[in-house]
Every structure is written in structure tokens, then in C-alpha cells.
Length: 308
Length: 252
Image 1 (cartoon, each protein chain N blue to C red):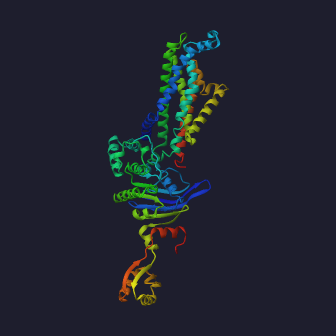
Image 2: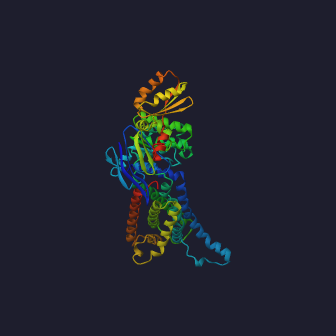
Image 3: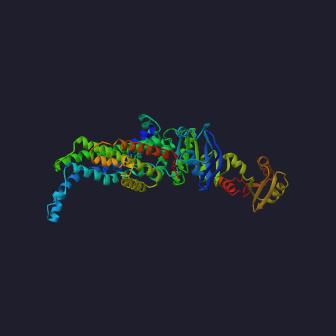
């Protein structure tokens, strides 16, 4: 749906984006992960037509972004990190303004206003001036504005970073709802947990470069640590000695009643290890594959050290 | 066209909610009422202060009352109008209010045209109302030689055109500078610095300030070059503003 190739953005001598490439599939929730200052917002601003870029190509549904900019922008929605509205307008008035800008009829504006305000739970505050809204309400209203013209793709720039836990959960639930409806979402954040909750594809951006682009499942499979933690009641040494001799096991470490089994081949270990433990006759208290979360993977990738 | 329509409505709402109409109409109409009264009272005030009859030093009639009003319009009302409208684009840019409209595919040219049209219509209306009120009061308060309503409306038209030139200048500086006040001060500096230049060489016929000199004469005679030149300059400045707004980075 969206293809970005070799995107470069410079501010005088400072190269903020150094030729990044990635592709967003239709219907996916694409996480754009990176530390503050990595270039996430710059990428967002380019993709939503707010700033220009120096080199590279952007194609939306096969159409060149620069040549078809206004037409493409009518198909997308954008929620900036800090949304700004005309504060003297009520929510209804602002949505009417956006509707007219999108060429909607008065009737469609009226109906759609009620719909989007319902979605974000702001119907009761719709007659109040937007300037008097709280931060969370403004964020929700920004989503209503971005959804107003029923866009094909939604860009969300760190929508949860300034919210309290409750507000954050509401936004994530909304993203999940939109995902269920088949909307394509491009979601930038530095909150790893949010990516794990809603995204199925992601890119990790570091200092203007894409460190990795992958779907979340493959990424976890690739970087998952092949270590089993087994806790036993007795027989720890005997079991460890038996495991040490197997060709698909790298090493075994003992700590009191626990054994950490480092395996070379995760697939064989999934089938064989539990059988061997069962055959040993030891009483098993716990048996776990040590999983690494996105935070581990992120730190390993951005520090260029996959062995951490 | 959709951007133009949306912004035109938005400008009307904004001007009403932020009391811009009120400020402009007070700024223009106040002097229309005050100038004839002040002119009527001035000799009496001076006489009371200096204990002498100074009426022979003043030529005060309905015509001079309107000419004095034109002077007040150019010196004070112009300043008020420019300062009110100088933030029209800079505020939108610096406070990032254009993020949603631009990211929805809004047309920069549509926005610029809507703003210019709104600001121009407001100003022209205020100026014509001001002249009408001034004509009415001058005829009530002051006696002597007067100008016909047609002559007064001719002056209003010429003054309006000069103000439109100022509004176009304010718009381009507003698109170039981050603060509305700075854009206003630069616009006023450029406008006032053009006054002495308007008497030099070819500028004598083409400089917009000559519209004010013609307005003081209540006549359109010989004004075709300056009217044409001013309209061309306004169109060029608005075209440049559209170009600037289509190239500007909304988030810098």
C-alpha cells in the first residue's frame, strides 16, 4: 500500500533520515519504533505532506507521492503528536470545517460528525470549545478529525506518549478496533509495549537509519533466546550430565535446583527436551522457554550487539 | 474551491469570535465621527487657551473635514487594520494550525485567496461605512463648501484600494515571518517608507500612496496608471504568497 525507498531528509548539513526504505501492507498495523530524535516524526511529516524530502521515492498504491500529493492526502488521516485546532471552535464546528475542506455535503458532515464523536467518546463535549479540552480529549478529538473523511490509511505519531494509563488503554483499544475494521495504520512510538499490543509489522529506526523491518512474529522468532529454564525437586546433577552429551544442546548451567539449558536447535529441543526430562523421573516444578520481549530485541538491535 | 469555501467560513467565524470586526469598525468609524467634531471644536479650544480669535488661520469646511478624515485613516486606521491582519498566516504556521488542513489535502492557494478576500471585503466595507458616516457628520457639524456623495465615495474607493495593497503586503510578510507583530511592523515600515518615494520620477504616477493624494482631491482624474499599477502589484504579491504557502514546511 505504501512503499518508501531511499528516503533522505536534510536540514542544512544535518541528515535526519539517511535513505530509509520500508513497505506497509494493506490492512496492517505498522509500528515505527525508535528513540526520541531517531527521525520518526520527520518521517511522519513527510508521509503526510507537511514537509518535503531531499531524495528517495514514496509510492501510495503505486502512485508517486510528489506527483499526486493532494489526491493521496485526501485518502489518509494524520494524528500529530501535539494536535492543534482552532480553539475558538466547538468540536462540531471544527469537524464541519474539515468536512468542507474534504468536499463533503452538509448532510454527510452532520452524520459523520456524530459517528466519529461516538467512536472517540466525545459526543457530550461536542458543543464545547476545543480550546478548553484536556490533553487526552484533544488526542481523542484529533483521532476523530483524522477519521472524519473515512481515510484508507491512518498515521498516528506517538498518540499515547502524553496520556495517562487509562487514556493510553483507550487509544490502544481504538487502534485495535480500527485494525479489526481493516484500516491500515502507521503508528510511531517509543513505547515498546504499545507496539507489542497492536502492531503486526514494524520497523526500528535509529539515528535516521532503519535497523530492521519485519513482522513482529518473525522478529520474535528470530531473536528469541533458545534457553529453557527447568526447576526440579532433586536429580538436578544427573539430568544435567545426561543433557550435556546431546548434540543439539550447547551448554547446561546449574543453579541450586534450577537448570538453564542452552540449545543449538530450537525445533529439536521443543520435541525432545520435555521427553528426556520426563524419562529422568525427576519431579518437575517448572519448565519454561525463556522468551525475550521487544525491549530486549530493541536494545540489542540499536546497540548493534545481537549477543546481549 | 472546497478549501476556499471552508476557509472563507472559518475566517468569518474567527473574526467574529476574536472581535476583529469590532476592532476594525471602531478603528475606522471612530475617526469618521470624531474628526468633524474635533475640527469644529479646535478653533474654540485654541481661542480659550490663547485668548485670541484664530478662526482666520483655519479653513474649516465640509471638504477639509473629509480630507482630515482621510489623513486619520491613513495614519491610524491603516495601522490598526494591518496589525489586526498581520498574523493571518504567521499565526497559523507558528502555532501549527495548518497540520490538519494540509494533511487532508487542503489547497494553499484556496486558503490564501479566502483570507485575502475576507480581509479585503471587511476593510472595504469598513472604509465605505466610515466615509458615509464622516460625510453625514461633516454635513451636520460643519458648514461651508462640501463634496458630493459621489466624490466622497470616489475617495473611499481609492483609499480602499490603497488599504488592499497594505493587506496584500501584510499577507506576504505574514507568510515569511514567524510572528504576526513582526509582519505587521515590517508591513507598516515598508508602507510608510514608500510615502516619500511616491513623489520621485516614475513612482509619481505608479506608487500606491498616490491613491491617497487622489482621494484628497476627490477625483479619479489621472489615476488610471496608479490604479493599474496597484492592482498588478496586489495580484503579484498574492501570487507570491500562494507560492510561498505551497512550498513552506508546515512543521519546521
